Length: 548
Image (cartoon, rainbow, N blue to C red; front, side, top):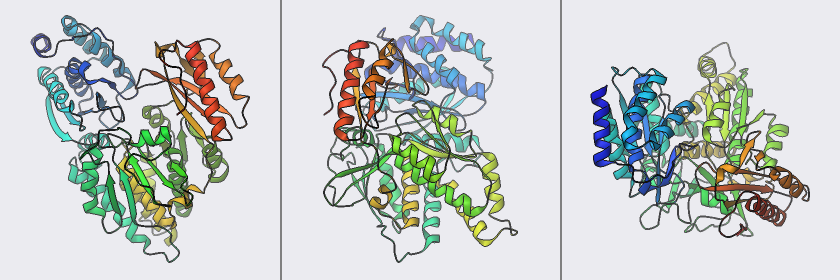
């Protein structure tokens, strides 16, 4: 071990020294900041990934991306053996190791090894992939140097979407039971299920569904993968890919986050009346849909709308199958109030609320046999418990059941193959939405009419220190600074159907404000007023916030 520690320190000092005292923290989406601050961090995360691999006696993943952030940013997410996010206790180790001095790296590693009882004689292996940012190759090399210095082996997948990397890790650690750990295996599993479901439903004479989709891929890695996808599904879906990276800048005036926050189409997306459109984010783990109606009014189908569509579809399949399984839907405080009422009162599906961040929703979704989780930003998936998977598969071949029951169980088996259960996956979610719309014979306006969103607005408030904001109740209540929640409550009380909350961003140096009310004008006013309260009471810097 001593020899390894000296090697790790030597490479750090010679190739990846810590050049700044800037503190960096492993947050909801891993490390994420300006790319020039990350070389030493990526190297050290290579070392940590080896320790994690030895501890779990399994392959660990590392995805180099900053998702929806500007192209100048980058970051890294570590992936645990089942394709899930890194265990919370190891997030603390990641932050600790990333911020020690170069001289203290050996002692920091020793501390982690001691605390976690890391078996240093166990072989370690790591899978790494990256997005399309110019800095990603350099940072990938730094990470791989860390893996090698710590005595591990590394498989470089090159360009993948974040969900694809999660999928690869799950596949290899399940010995192929979940799927084949190749890009071909990924596409084959998802598209075979998609085509099977589409073929089963045949043609509906009264269908409004059109097999054409206009897709904004945020000038990111999703563009490459969407082009590959089209080869498998052309019989059932035609995709017109925009913002494909050939000329535009990553995430600039495009992508799921831009569309969601600004509530307008991505640049370069011409919206014809009732034309079905969608946007991925930069690493293709989020998707939102949208369209313009006959009057040219923009309509957004965000994660709430996707979640309700999916939950309603699964509820119908469950009812037809006769299986007694517990279906639940997990949202965050960002979920539109109308969606929560619709899910609870119309779909009769239980709703749980979790803190923002996919790891929190994922954890809560595990409490159900079928757990649907989506953030309003379009990041989400469905989890099937081992019990649910077993019951569904058994029912699919149970001759004691009626034909209708068996057919529903068979469809659910296929749906399980269509869904990437490791993490939110824009490609998988897109195919699922398209299957459901085709099944119902709906176009996007039919989907949208299920319920009407309350008008809402989001703002970012620049503050000197975002950590002065602390929250409780799944981030719906501000605990500090003292008096802020009371100020928010008094502002909300002025508006019909008013609701607002504030939370420190997990990915940027800002405080996020969400507001909704009976009209867009009132939602904008409430967001502005709450934003000004945050600016005043939480150390705002720069220009005061305002809606665009």
